Each structure stands twice: as C-alpha cells, then as structure tokens.
Length: 159
Image 1 (cartoon, one colour):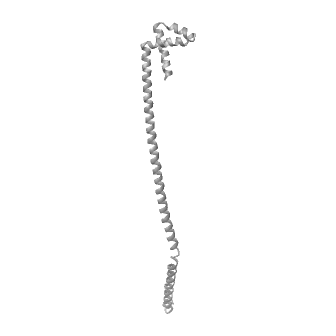
Image 2 (tube, rainbow, N blue to C red; image 1 turned 30 degrees about the horizontal axis):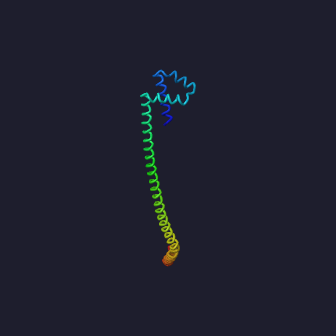
Image 3 (cartoon, rainbow, N blue to C red; image 1 turned 180 degrees about the vertical axis):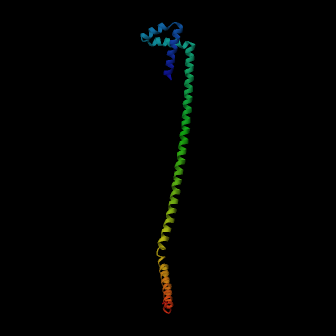
C-alpha cells in the first residue's frame, strides 16, 4: 500500500509542480538525482496542497476497505473450510455405516446360501429310493398285464 501512496504522491507532485510553476525546478532536481533534503521539501510542499491531502485520504480509505475486505474473506474462507470439514466427517460416518450394513447383509446372504447348499446336499440322494420303487411298481404292473394278455390270447385263436 505504501508503494501506491508513493505513486500517488509522485503524481500529485507532478500536478502541483505544474500548477505552481515548479515543473522546471522539479525536472532539474530529478535530473540531478535529488537529495534527501530536496525530497523532504517536495513532500512538504505536496502535503500542503489540498489535492495531495485528498489523494492521501482516498488512499487511506481504500487501505481500510481492503483490510476490511481481507478480514471478511478470511472469515468466509474459515467458515467454508469448517463446513467442508463437517461435510467430509458426515460422509466418512455414512461410509462407515454403509460398510457395516453391507457386512451384515453379506453375512446374512452367505448364511442363507450355506443353509440352502446344506439342504440341497442332504436331500440329494432322496430321489433314488422313490425312483426304484416306481420302477419296480411299473415293472410289476407291466408283468401283470402281460400275463393277462398272454392268458387272454392263448385260448382264442384268430385264424
């Protein structure tokens, strides 16, 4: 901010020198690389003018506004950062809850699959005995009807 003030003072010096007829003296001093005393005189002269005072007041006012803006931005960034961290914590907590629920569901499904697998394995040989009984009954019925047919066809000749 001091650089901006220095530039404003330099600008004011040029304007003041032109207004008071001191432009030529300023050029000579600038060419001769003004000494500290001449700089002080020029600063005193510039500070006495209303234009320079107005520029200094404007610069100070702008500095205050910039500081205020800086503080507001810092507060806003801190608030946003805090909110962001809270949201990340909530997301992390939700993620942990989802993982726990997923593990519960996985264990439940695996338990059901294992029960179904055991049940299928246990009942795997249960179809053989009924099938053998069915084949025996079908064979017995077939043999019975075959004998009846042979008996019925033995006594009657179609020729």
